Amino acid sequence: EVGGDLYNFLKKDDKLYFCIGDVSGKGVPASLFMTLATRGFLTLASTGRTPAEIATRLNAELSENNEMGMFVTMFICAYHLKDGRLEYCNAGHNPPVIGNAEGQYAFLDVKEANAPIGLWPDLEYVGEEMNLPSNSMMLLYTDGLNEAENRQQEQYGEDRIIQLMTSLSTSSSRDIVEALKADTDQFRDGAEQNDDLTLLAFRMT
Image 1 (cartoon, one colour):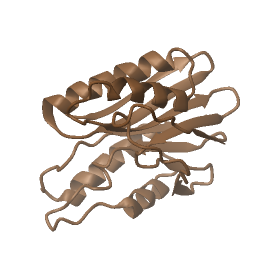
Image 2 (image 1 turned 60 degrees about the vertical axis):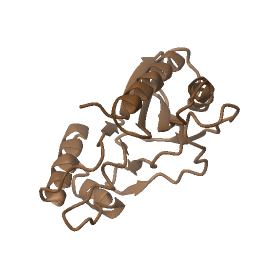
Image 3 (image 1 turned 180 degrees about the horizontal axis):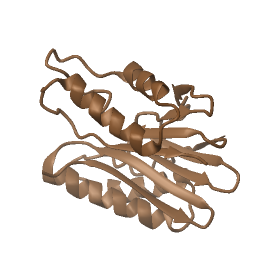
Image 4 (image 1 turned 90 degrees about the horizontal axis):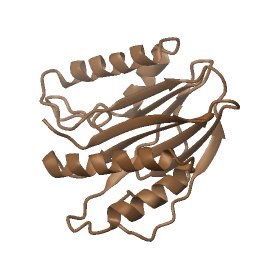
């Protein structure tokens, strides 16, 4: 099977770049568009650009000759390993979950949502930044998590994400990802998976 979710990461000097994304549509066209977005992210990140600059350049490239009108929502980050500063740019994607050292979790308050990438070629994307202290946790995900449906067509929802992560506040990134996957499967209770699901977790040490 092929899908349209993407994620990747790249270390450049003292910065760790990472992103997650969700391409519109399904099947082979979405998969091909996903490949272009992923390669573009890695190429631009390797030049040391900011997340906003990456989004702006990537949008210009993917908008060109985009006759099918495809687009990708993305959340692009650059984490400064030396001082804990996080630069990020949200291109129409779900805001990530942030957890502090005390085990308190909440969705990041993103003020600049920006548009998805690939629709309008002349957009100038706006980035933001924050400090992430030691032992902070960050979860990026696609809507295959919060919009997962059970047999009654009820959605998994965002509150359940926060509740589960709070109960696992001392767990590793891998354990949190595995727990979310298992809880989503249990919630669906045999209902068919209705969308791709991608999870990317980091603990800042």
